[in-house]
Image 1 (spheres, rainbow, N blue to C red):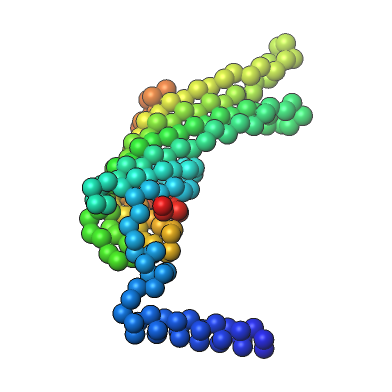
Image 2: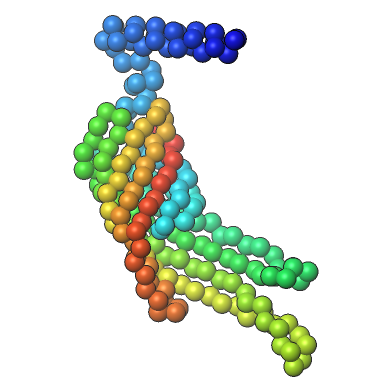
Length: 193
């Protein structure tokens, strides 16, 4: 019962504050912060070409164009011989994304993006030699390049920006010669400053 009373009081209070803001004709602090166009973004991302990682974005020319750098940090798992699937693994992926504003709104924008990525992957394959009764580890290194293109949407809540980018992605594995084209879906959460 206390929770219901608290919720009703909270809704009444926010309605009262919002109504005063609308009557005065001035923008409130939340609205002003949310609709302000910030030039620098830092955040976390995930997706087909991003994998997951950290990113930095900078808007130029009155928020028409942006450049974004994303990095998938190196992951390393020490090899342990008591595990059946013992391995050591390292991955690093970084890329550069170009973004263009198609249309800007008060609480967001439609964008178009093109990105390029470079991917390095290393792994150790575990082999058992029956003749000598010994194990051998063979290091496997792979390099690939890729990219994606497509539209997206970005929207703001206070100092945070959320974006969803959809499109088509391609990747060429330089080591094996394999090529793939897949749908791309990228998303990120940014802090704007």
